[in-house]
Length: 347
Image (tube, rainbow, N blue to C red; front, side, top):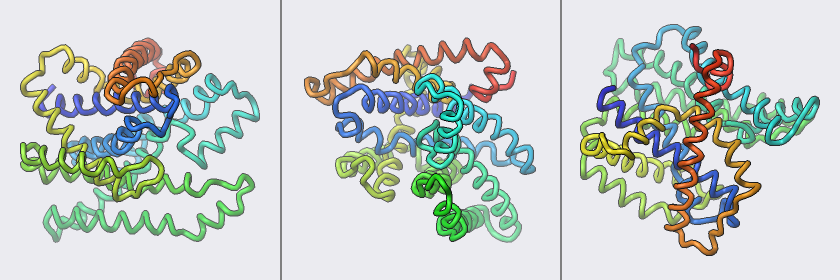
């Protein structure tokens, strides 16, 4: 594995730990989604994942050829795990749904992706947008420079997504749907917030490598994060604020990861982060089962613990949840069909 890949694996390891910690704080503390630690983590952790996805996509841009093979590959990697965990595994095990209730749940998840493992379906749609973006950019590069063609292609994609959001046809279909679909949920399929996060990672990798990993960039990102994050409130703050915070946090974590990969690569904790970072999808879809099991028997008293100690406690528990999730998923993956449908892994 080259140094660049290790750097990204370390950041991905940090990011998935933040996801698990956030869910643990949400379901296993009295304040739930109102605590300081939870609020700060949710200000950046999912946009960070989208940014990292875009960062990695920059390495594979030249491998994108025809739409059919690209979509088939992404469908196996993302849609199969999304479908089985969102429509079958989680509602069957966690909610004890059967028969028509399970079908009704599936319809609800389609209309409100947040009820399922939403990151996978939103990332699938963004990958589709990215395919279109690459094709437009490649066509423009016949007459323009790479930077200008990428910029114009991005603007065109954002315009198309905005038009989709404003589509009267979509609104009419939703208004007339017998289940009165949640429009806010459906809009997440066209999330400009996550498209911009994805493209920020792509552009960082392709054009700003020389500025990205620099001490001054790290300091600016850290100052911006510390300054902006107290203004963030989960579920209330604007998209612009979250994008600014997540960009600052992403720059900090990428630089921190680069430092760790250069100077502490052989340490126990770095090896664990790399190990975890290479299995983020497995952890993401599996850990929810154990978080909900813990919610029935473990409640962290966050009124007694100060935020720092609460974060340390939640990190230790989350690390154990992550390792258990990896262990379970590795066992399940030994079966070729479970590995394919649950984790998008071909034998």
